[in-house]
Image 1 (cartoon, rainbow over the protein chains, first blue to last red):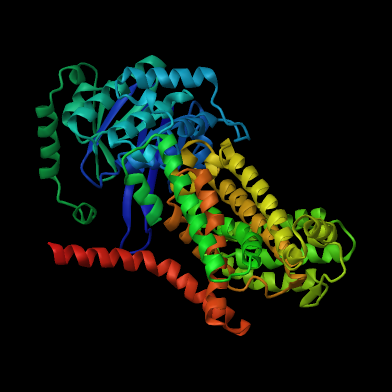
Image 2 (cartoon, chains in turn cyan, purple; image 1 turned 180 degrees about the vertical axis):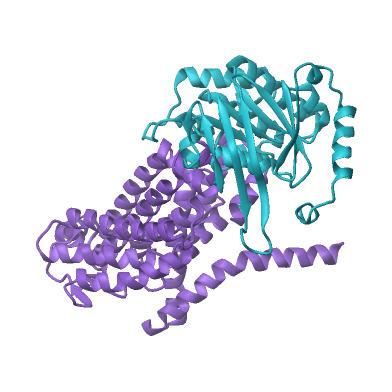
Amino acid sequence: MLSLEQVSVTFNAGTPNEVRALRDISLSVAEGEFITVIGSNGAGKSTLFNVISGAAEPGSGRIRLDGKDITYWAEHRRSHDIGRVFQDPRLGTCPGLTIRENLSLAAIHGRSAGFRRDVKQAQESWFYQQLERQHLGLEHRLDADVALLSGGQRQAITLVMATLTKPKLLLLDEHTAALDPNAAEQVISLTQELAEANDLCVVMITHSMQQACDLGDRVIMMNRGKIEFEIAGAERQNLKPADLIDRFHSLQDGTELSDAQLLA
Amino acid sequence: MTATASAANQPQASSFGANRSFILRGILLVIIVAGFMSFGNVNIGAIGQGLGYALAGVTVFMTFRVLGFVDLTVDGAFPIGGAACAILIVNGHSPEYAMLMGFVAGALTGLATALIDIIFKIEGLLASIIVITGAYTVTLHVMDGKSNIPLLGQETLISRHSKTFRTWLVEQFGDQMRRQSTNLLEIILFGCIVLIVLGILYWFLRTEIGLAIRATGKNPQMVRATGLNHNLMIIIGLMVANGLAGIAGSLVVQQFGFADVSLGFGLIVRGLAAVIIGEVLLRPRTVGQLLIAAVSGMLVFDISRAWIFSALDLPTTDIQFVSALVVLAALGAPRLFDRWKAYQRRLGG
């Protein structure tokens, strides 16, 4: 499905500020797999997502999606296959536009924008159903300005919009970190529902060890631009947050803090 | 931004309520302005002039507010549009065709700014200064190397109807209307054109492309995530916006009866003032309201400038200084008011 082959990203190469954000990362994600990614600040998690989504270009290495080499594709070109939700709820929806208008934008996916105004009936009713199931009361406010909604509501809308046109891969970048516990729980359950219903491939960055253990089939721990360890299979089934935290600490103690980590 | 941001923070009203308070503010504004005009003895020509420039105010609204792009191109697109319109009229083309080409000329100017911004990664402010500088020469070339083209005796939108309109007016309302007939005709013709253009723009901004252009200014990340090329949206947005400045230039050229290479001087400041005056006075929220506010702002600007002129009995040489003062008042007054409120609060607390 998605494969990264020895991908490296270096910022400010050749200067004293050189940061090697990704070091020869290789990773493959299978069809329908749900992966959680953990790691300290500056470990390279977001850079990994930027490289996959096309917001950053790798210095070396290859990225393939469904067999196609997408390493140098522009961000907007791969967005048809890759949906992304950010930590900041403001990034996923557009203020000044109503919920319905945001939906119209999301529905354009994969074709060029035209002069039509309305979303296809099927898409709108699907969107409506998804919102209705969240009990956020949003389904009656389709003509409200998105700027008036809370972070949790905006994040829920972003998620539904990101899956509206059935992407192959969904990248979730700490998408519940800015929400209160209640809203976070709601968004997580929506994430699970959408992933299962659409048989999506999901990669999720999280700082919550609980989430890393509860969700998905595989845990990846990143540190200093590398994949430090992976936990899958039987070991993953019995994984508890405490185990993860222990392994996290042993890693931190065993290595000197790099300049990059201190500055981050 | 202050006006729209504070509007977003207010508790949500039903769309009917929002429209009603906007309409009420609009009616109040019309009454106040009308009062000022009759009380201050302002010639109604100021309205016609405001309508001529109104679409340039919409240009600034489109670039600064919708696209979030600091664009000064309007200073170049306006005279190019006017020059193209004038040269075509002089060469015997119809005023409608000439205005359409005015739009095209303005749009091409906007395209130049967009391409410089995208290809060379030069930010909008600098890119548009480069374009304005070059546009001066282009305008001169469009006008066959002359810095001024008179339209005396040519068939313009106004001169075409002026005779029949004057006769009709004098027949209906008596001889005292004779002096105002050109001014009234301008208000009617330009009012219709501005309304038609606003209508088209309102429709356009609510289509998929329009939504994408609006999102480009607010959240370019989302536009890319939607699979749309946000550079393309900047190109389309700047072309449409500066095309409007081209139409405004065409209208003003026909109104003045000549095209001049320096017609766009200081227009960006004027457009910015129009947008801010409209936002402060009408507090618009929806797209339609924002468009109306930009046009109203330009009208208020021209009328208040004319009022200052007649009240202080100034010579026309002082026109730019008075413009600068009106712009300063429009930009400065809301901020001064906020500071004064903060000062009062401190005294109270």
